[in-house]
Amino acid sequence: MKSLTRAAACAGVLALSLAACGGQEDPLTGSNGKDTGTIVIGSQQYYSNTIIAEIYAQALESEGYTVQREFEIGQREVYASELEDGNIDVFPEYEGSLLQYFDPDTTATSAEDIENELAEALPEGLTALDRADATDQNALVVTKDFAEEHNLKEIGDLAGIDGLVVGANPEFEKRPYGPEGLRDAYGVEVELQTIDDSGGPLTVKALNDGEIDVAANIFTSSPSIASNDFVVLEDPEQIVPEEHIAPIVSDAVDTRARDILNEISAKLDQDQLLVLNTRSVEEQAVPEVIAADWLADQGIAD
Image (cartoon, rainbow, N blue to C red; front, side, top):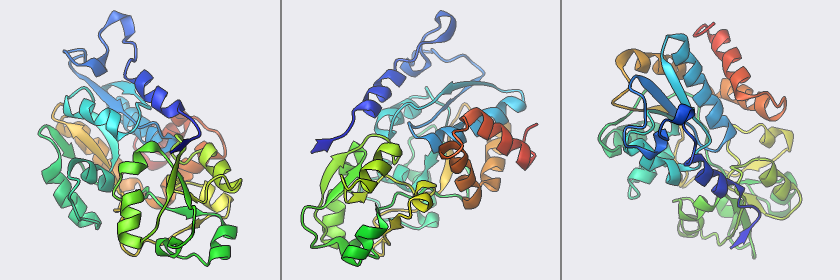
């Protein structure tokens, strides 16, 4: 397996050793390190996820809640145990992949089936709140030139291309739509080159430069797809589940806070998610500003 960077793996470890303020115990190490009455909000090491987590945080703070941010912790394999242990109270998640994490044998692909099965699969003490209309799908993405050269429209069209190199986070290797899933569903053989930036600039550059043939971690809400004229390959076998965004909360989150988070989900649609992501990628706006502007526009917080 090839590798471009180990940055995200290191960042995930570092995030788990976050220093607590004022000499308090690290909230991610458990043992009552979290202050009673404080809502701990986490996020993946993915800019779009951090923006949504910041929206949750500011909305709750505007209603008088005390919030502690534990952002960019890493990928699901790193933070899931912290959710289960109650060290994180709120996390913006992608329902399809989360279901596959807790129930690897699931065959659900539709939003409704995923939602129903996720309610059963989540560990005790965790609840999925209302899902947003917005999705952030995993996708297999190629350049326009590569698509035209090989007459590509859907994932199965990749079958038979020798030496096919896919760039993705290391977790891709174990995903249902990873190398084994591609082989079983579509007869596509790939070599994984790890690029640990969740579809960020390293992935985009590698795809444009021909270092990889396919990117498997550029999400469908990424503005880089349109700005680079990339092609998203269709997935008729639905090996990639629907990825509606929903807050996952612990039992420590009260009804009023849950209502606030559900209001955010009710207002977050696909077009707005793309705007949020575009502001981050193209304007280089920070999550705090993006979140504050969006909440003000939606009338959720001043």
